[in-house]
Structures are given as structure tokens and as C-alpha cells.
Length: 104
Image 1 (cartoon, rainbow, N blue to C red):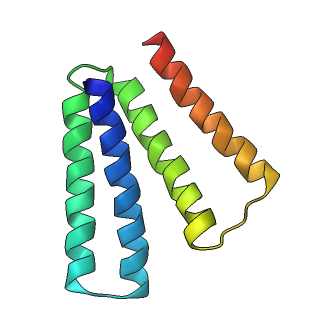
Image 2 (image 1 turned 120 degrees about the vertical axis):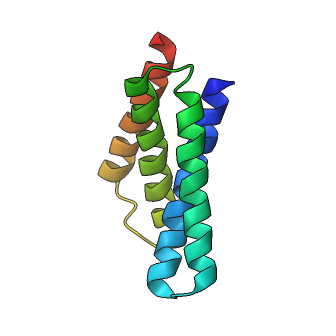
Image 3 (image 1 turned 135 degrees about the vertical axis):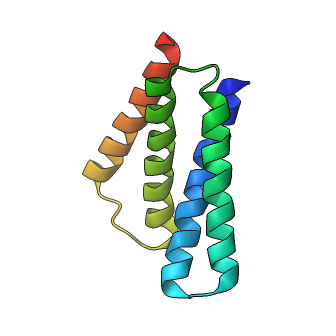
């Protein structure tokens, strides 16, 4: 259950980054509220997940999900670069997060 909550926390983190980008492009109260709710959900789920997952592991996986999610969203929604190097390093982040799960 803690790992599922950690993945949900990472999902909220990605949504928070997307709404942050929307806020930069279009300033509105709705975008501010969506961003605040997404980050609040992310931190709440992360806090809960840390009850059953070591802090260092939980934080590393959470930031990894946010980083990879943000990079993938950027590539597909905002036409950011899709170079082989970028994809390789994203794969390395994913591999590291899976490795942390396997040894926890």
C-alpha cells in the first residue's frame, strides 16, 4: 500500500508540474488552485508513504517519478527534445527507482 501511495504521490507531482507550466502560460486562479491541490496531494501521499518506506528511498523514488514524468510530458505535450541521450538518462532514472524498490 505504501508503494502504491508513493506512485500516486509522484503522479500528483507530475500534475503539479503540468499546472505550473499552464500557470506560466496563462495566469488564472483556477491554475493556481490546481497547482496547489496537486502539490498538496503529492506531499500528503509522500508523507503517508514514508510511514512504511525509508525516507531516502521514498524521496528518491518520488523525485524520480516527478523528473521522468515531467520530462516525458515535456517531450510529448510541449515538443521538447527527444534525443537518444535524453531517453537513455530517463531510462537510467527509472532503472534506479526500480532498483531501490527491489532492495527495499
